Image 1 (cartoon, rainbow, N blue to C red):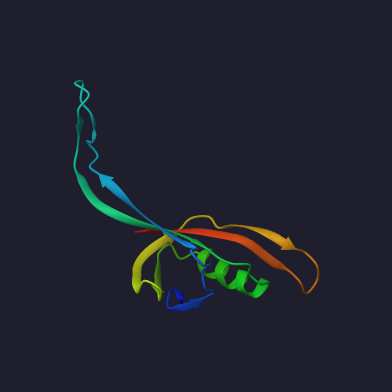
Image 2: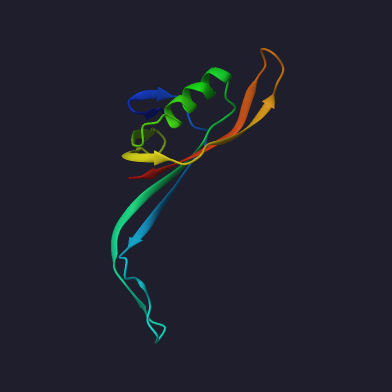
Length: 121
């Protein structure tokens, strides 16, 4: 199931490696009245996709980091889930990636637990 960032093919996410959430955006005047009743209106729903990758080689890590850590603020992300036939595509910014070095041995470097959030603009 291919993942594209700015129309460039990226390493494939891990099995069950994408989680979906939608955040409600409320009006600025939202809050509780003195009666305790909640007041406000939802103005939009914004997508967040948390993406996790299987162990990555140094080349794969560099490709992801080049796209995610570029000075470009907004990115186009596209992912097609062949299992459920779900396609998501939206303009986003990325959170801070995190990952661990699995092995530092020369020619056997792998990076594990790479995670990133793509947050809809």
